[in-house]
Length: 297
Image (cartoon, rainbow, N blue to C red; front, top):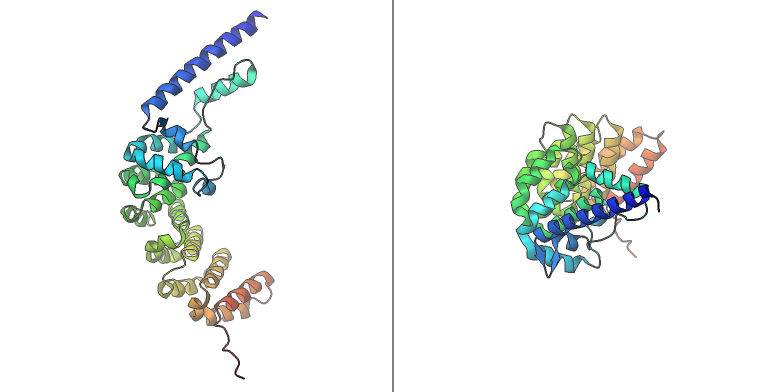
């Protein structure tokens, strides 16, 4: 065996031992339940790679939920650290070494994106238990790359987080306003608390914010007395994409949106040359129109 190969093997083995010892010390410093550390429990959540699927239930959810809730607020510091996981320079350096030799593969832990999704899923399992983390999560709303995902977690915590979320809908940064609206809408009917604030965003100066507000109202689909009149006004929006979403949203309300029929019919009369838009309006009208009375025999 060449000297350089022996050197690589020795250095790699030593580094692997050091990394393993550091990982062991980190895990023993974490809260634990039934002999497993927090990171070992969240590793069981699922193997999916998308944000939404990481928050959905799977075969391990019940078991992991029991463990995470048993650790309770003691889990929050580690979960907050995991939310900010990024690939460090050391992580990149170890990856480079692993590519250059095949003798000893040095463990580098979970990918940062996977760590973030595991933490998000764990926060979802904690629900209201995670209330003490509200200030730290709210601070992360300032990061436009994190805002949407953080909002989803805050809504999941419950009413204690609602005032901060409603305030964030008035943020001076239009990107953050839009991402907060999008995140709130992700929860569907469970986010009905935000309907008044979302309807006020329908006149926002930023078209993307208006679009996400319409989309959120479509998913929440509640309080038609307030929502339908606001969506009818959006049919006159200067942005075609926003109008498109408004038509689709009105259709989702079904017969509860019957008051929108005249406005939709007028819009349909002006858009005969746009087949796709005409088809969308026609579909919305059909969904909104009350069923015909039964025929008399």
